[in-house]
Length: 311
Image (cartoon, rainbow, N blue to C red):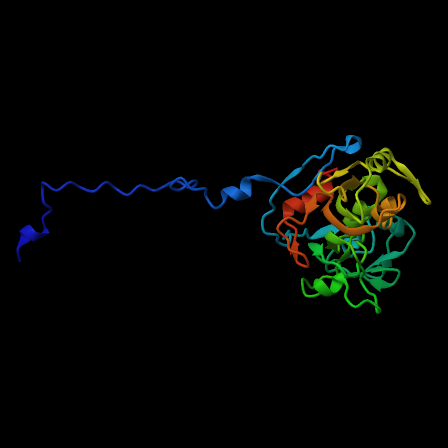
């Protein structure tokens, strides 16, 4: 065997070692993940209030949703066990405990701070409780769907859309009427649901509204200043046209959770709402969530909801 064939040519230049290219931009192109880090406008966002000047608000694109996976402690407080069962909030659970409505392993418990195990038999007014894991689901509600847990006369409800999403019994937080679309949260977390719907927590809601005619500047100013409806005064946080070339399109932000409040505001001035889309609820948006689709919230989103970070 000719050993010279195995020897490298001493005059031949060695090829430079292949460099490991760092993550990021490649060959002058944007890295695929860069777009996830950018702030992008959701839509008309926040508005300039009484001045009527159009504004924008930006949100970060959310990552792929996933169910929260937490390791439960061996023992938890009894009021938390009850709240986890979807019966009520922890504060209300304390009241039920003091009233003698709760029993643990057959014994009535009236002492606050009592701790129980998940293997214990806890009953509320004789009914055994099941402390399910918490599920948080965001739906982009389509039109002609009823926001209810059960309606024998409804052709289609939001529960029909999410029926196979999880084994836990979830329910909508607040409501959107049949002809309204957009952000709707469903959960089995009774404590958080009450928090998000109670007026004292002032949860922000932003809607895009389509009217049957252009909104008059004078009416916009009146709405921005606050109006009186048959069930009391209504204050709007911000309102503006979302398209200066088409003043029938309006953006409105408010905290009120009263029934059909947006439609009633405009009806007060003889406008008919032909389109109503909720684009923001307590920090949640429908960004990248097609109409009629849903996803689970990630841990960061749940944390922000509970901490009122967007208020």
